[in-house]
Image 1 (cartoon, rainbow, N blue to C red):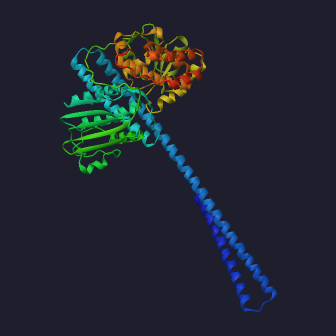
Image 2: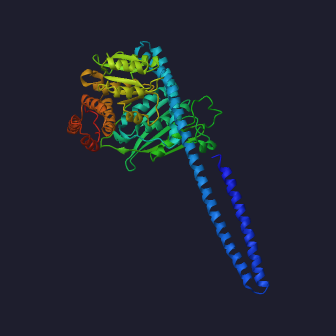
Image 3: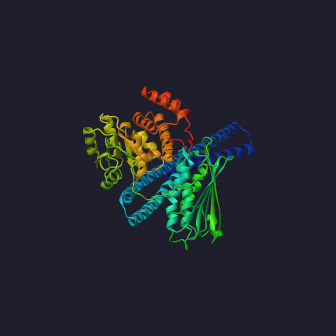
Length: 559
């Protein structure tokens, strides 16, 4: 790129040379014409004139040719510069992605320790005062995690690389998750939190539940942050004609000044900073929500009166699954009590590999009442030695470790023939949107992001432990909604494993579905899947999966 000015200078000299030559020849030609017109005609003068005319034409041709060559060279230089600029931009994007992945890892690792240890305190304490302190720590930690996710998500959305991961989900589960995240915050500010869910909303929808939840959480979080007294209300409805979920978030808070309304959805913009200086946030929540709503072909709007409050409304298109409606929704009553494990597995053995000792302490502490035998390792070589000498039912393998990383450990286990059919779960603070698919494509059986959520950790173990080595608690068996959600979640993953022909994951997944039971009308389909898997007929499994629709289960049906 630094040589291009020199090239252009040389080309300019060539153009000047031929231009002067052209002028000389033109002068000779004009002089010949003058002689022809002012003197008597003779043969020598005609020859001179003809020669001059030919030279003139030749000069014109040369000038035109040089001009065309110059244009082509300029165009080629422009294309080279453009290509280098594109390459530089792509390199900058890669650097930004690497930076975000590193930032995610470095920040999420200590948060994992804080929230994990705090969860152990919540489970084990008998003192209400200590439990309340721990709840406050949990809320603060989740707020910090929320801010980090905002930054990561904004970067991915802005670069156009964020995708929607759509699957079937239960509306009641969505509402429960929203309530669990917002109710504590509202209570902390002595606000009334009101939830109105229309009974005509489908019980099961198809879409990206996590992104829908993120949009609504952003609105609810803002409502709580900017409301000092009064209430925060969420109204959820369904538009049958449009096939869309309608959500209104209403608060009695500060409201928005007229001159600030046009700035509301600008990135990194926080309006009325003078009076909101003590309110936490990145200024990205509404920007991200608008981008996500647009990605779903929905709309977001608001009305606000300064000093009286605001109403934010979103319309999110979602596909309806089945004809069952949510009916009368009632918020579950949360009761504090001694934690009861969801399963027992005294005959099972797992290995957890992480280079941070606190992370190992967190996972072993969360699972200590399950009866599991838990071995730990802090580096790749120690992991390989343990895998050679022992048989495990699940291995949780940290991706980013000094020296030998998790991907290299996985490769050595596979090539060394010591895997023995064990599911290997990627354990990572890399929480970018495409991370799950990346690790599955690398050969991992599953993916668990940090900070590790206790319920997700338990569900992963329930999913992958062999059937004969796990016993679900009575309470877990009675959790109809959770069990139905689990079946639907397993089904979404099952599609991924069938398409990638992941034998180890399919073996564990089919066993998990067998344990949970299967809706009667679809038992034949499930038996077909199992039969095809026993014959390793992946083509037949793919054909079967393409026909399956996860059922909308009635509330009273046992999952």
